[in-house]
Image (tube, rainbow, N blue to C red; front, side):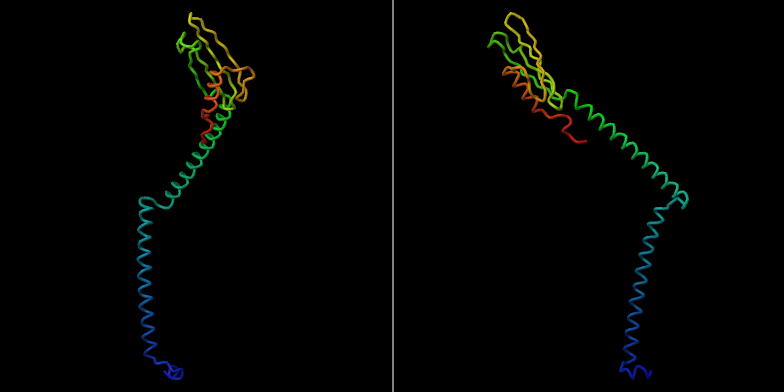
Length: 173
């Protein structure tokens, strides 16, 4: 112990420090063992009833299933997009305005029906009913929300109400 005496260190302090270090390392090893047992339990639950090969087959089959589902979703998305493109040309916005054409003489049997696409193209169908049971029907073309023929007040009201309607294309898929 001449070395420790030359440096000026008491050997008993060194032994105490080494003993404390040994206890810390022992506690660390115990905590690592407990952690390893915890992971082993999780692994046993995961591998329960399976060996490595059957687990690999199971995982590969799930990957194939995921690929099939992804292909199906991609196909469905393409179909939805195509249908959405087609639906731009279908009639989606409707409004009807019922009115009395002759101020109390015919009842509310007259009407203006406005039918529009997403681009506000379509027509206004008007039926004017008179007091003796006659009915006159008119169709006026609507292009981009405008008519190139003069509209009556009732037809304008039906057109404005139809243009305000929400298109089915306004909802994103």
